[in-house]
Image (cartoon, rainbow, N blue to C red; front, side, top):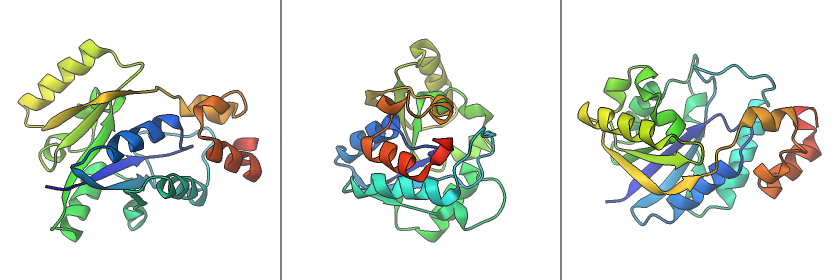
Length: 197
């Protein structure tokens, strides 16, 4: 079976943590495609310095060009209102009934998953690949994983541990956070004067 991995996020900006996830997914033989899905209106975030949608989309496209299995999906820009994952997955399954999807999330997302919109329905709609981050509390992660599995979630914990990156800190001082960005993203941000650089 070949899966299409759904990798959503605000990508404000796209950073090395995102690239590490893409690389890990690229190396999984069961993953046929990776759909990078920038969020249109994140339900739980208020940005201090939000890049324009076109800028975030372009950063995703730049990353996809460097990953053979990846492409950008703008599914969340096809509708109005907040970008709830439940609605996105439901729409994707309707549009592409022939595809088998898997949802990708970081440890920070997994431990708060039961706060998501219609989470109990969402977690039964498709399997999940979860990445621990370098700042992950393993005890909390394992406890939440066990709880969600009891409730019906199918979770595969990935072997790779992803670098924890604060997008907020990057936006506040891009130059100081240069090491947390792929070089091509840093150059793009600098050239465009994004985040007031």
